[in-house]
Amino acid sequence: MANLEKFEEFVDNLSQLDDETRFEYILDLARKHRHDPFPASDMTPEHEMHGCQAKVWIVHEQRGDMHYFRGHSDAAIVNGLVTMMTDSFSGLTSREIAELSIDHVRKLNLGSLTMQRQVGMMAMLKYIKKLGLAQAA
Image (cartoon, rainbow, N blue to C red):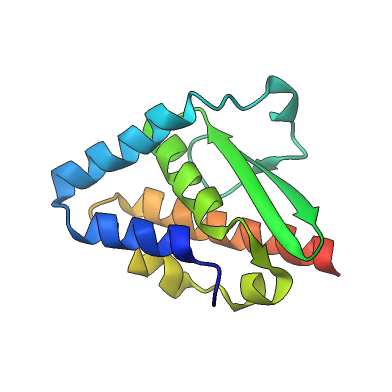
């Protein structure tokens, strides 16, 4: 896949951190995300994804064959994870989205997350794929 530069950047950054510092990195992503506010008008049932304990909203936009995602969560650590996932997989084509797999979540090396958060990350990937592939159909 040619368009996974941001994803690879996250993989590289996370691989150099211990568990405690990894949490700080994810929280920093959430803090930076606050400077790019997610409009309350997008916090609707239409954009809410399920599979996470925290509330998560992900909005999809297609421009040509490229898919772009932005999201938000009401929980700080999850907001950082949402930022990581939406930034990682924005700018992909329909074919590239179809090729995403659970191995992409595993490659982020987030093993220190609770099982619920890991399941939430997998649910986010599944939801991103659903949004991107539904629009491509």
